[in-house]
Image (cartoon, rainbow over all chains, first blue to last red; front, side, top):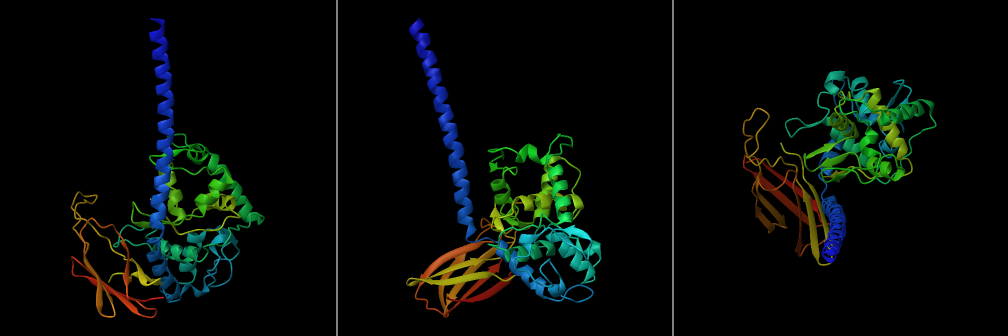
Length: 273
Length: 103
């Protein structure tokens, strides 16, 4: 009788070990397979289609005032695109505000090209060929010109530093119907939503890897998505009130995450599931 | 009018490697919109690639091909400076032709 029990216990322990090993191997191979899938897609990233459209838009005269973005200063001088994204968000004295890329593009469209604020932000996020977003295409073009450039957000600038600190506070602030903070999902290693590994943004490597790969082409949506979209959708998933496009709250979070990514080479627009 | 394709054509050894990105909705005809109405099928049906007027690839596509499709293939006989021309035709008879130079 005793032997039987002992054998049963041994078998159970063995089964337990086996299950753990198999589970671990499965998780690892899933992540590996997703990495392989991303690698296979890297070569033909449709983000290039958005980049091409954005480049055309950047150079062409637009809006009621019929001027191009040649006068639009992204921080490195009028019309300078190369490396500009790696230093955003930054403080713009002409607007008396810290701005991220999308907010700055809207500012140029309103103040230089003569669009109304409503027209400039009419299609923030695209949806198929009937509802294409100019902002997403412009963002794809501008960000692509910073590929390989090291992230260098000026955290010693007082306005940017204030935004960074506000963003940090928001990142850890719990609220909404689920009592969620950004840190609830993005504060530990190995968390995931369905099959997607979530980056741990409290670690520098995690923040760098995440921030430098937005904007990205989302294969599941067939759209290019910007960082404003990423934050907007995180807020939706947290059941927070909608994050207003270009709001100080969205720029503060962007400043926090971009600042955390300082030192890493920018690597977008990327491609994601 | 459809957006231009992105084409890269490079000589690798004795063959030419062609990579093409096309901008197209590739709607299957199986999806429904938020009102429950079927979204009509709209996809590329024929693709033709020519090198110096010689067809090097001809394909018939269906609705299973993804949105914004990517095609990569190789053919022999290309030389640097030659032109590669790609044409697609969709089920609306909309068409787009773009050209690239082999590098």
